[in-house]
Length: 336
Image (tube, rainbow, N blue to C red; front, side, top):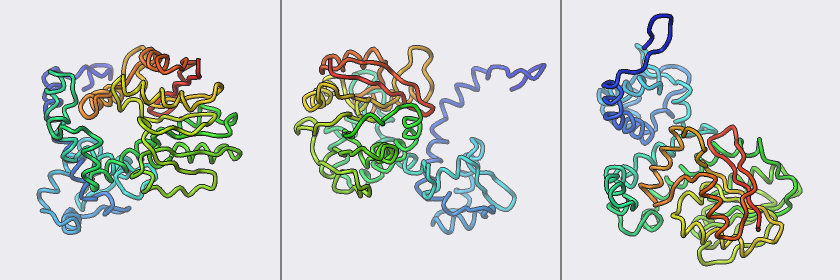
C-alpha cells in the first residue's frame, strides 16, 4: 500500500492478522503443487490448466484454483492460455540445480503438518510437538518410513546446497589436508570443499542407512558408517558439522561435540555451519527454523554465546563467527 509521495504505508493490522491466520492455505497449495510435480510439466510456453491436470491425474478446476492462489504469491504466472513459470516456480522443477521441490514436499508430509498442528503442545511443555504424532521422536519415525525418509533426505540435501556456495565464498579451506563431515548426509559440503582444495582428502561420517545410499563420486572422498553418540570418529585436521548441532537439545549437542573432541588432534578446527542467531534483529528464516526445531526435534537455532558454552563444555574454544552471503553462518572453534 503506497501513500502520498510514493512512500509505502504499514499494512493495516487487520489485514496483517488475516493474512497470517490464513497463511497455511498458500503453504498447502505449494505442498500440493510440489507433490504433483506441476512445475516439471511447464517449460517455456504457458500450459493450459487442463493439460496440467490431466498429466497430474487431478481435477482441472480445483488445480486452477490452487495455482491461482500461488500466482498471488509470485509462484507461477496465470495467462489466458495457461500457466507459465516465474523464477520461484522454476525452483519447483526437479531438474533445477537449486531445486526446492524436495523441501516443499517434505513440508507437506504428515510428519511435518501434523506436528505443526500440535505446536501448542510444544509451547505448553517445551517438548517436540512431533511426540504427539510419534512418541519415539523424529529419527526413529523416519527409519520406520523409508518413503518419507527419502523425501526428508532429499530436502536436507537441497537445503544444504543453498548454503554451500556461501561457505566456500568466505572460508579458506586450503590449510586442511584431511576433513571429516560429521552427519554430512550426502556430503555436498565435503564434496565442494574437496573440489576447491585439490590436495585434501575427506571422510563422510553418517549413520549406516545414510552411507549405504550415498554415491560418493569423488576420488578423494571416503565414507565411514557410524553413530556419533556411540562410535569413534576418525582423526582429521578439520571437522564439519553443517545443520547438525541445531537438530539436538543441549546435552546431546555436548555429546556430539565431545565425540569430535575425543577424535580431534590438538591443532584441529571445528566448523559449526548453521543459522546462528545474530545479536541484532532476527530474520524470518532463522526465526522460522528455530520454531521448526522446537516442533520436530527439540533442538534450536543458537546464538554465538550459546554455542560458545556448548563448545566449552566439550573442550573447544570458539574463535570467531563468520557471515556468509547465504542463509548460514560459520562458527570456528579449536581445542582449548
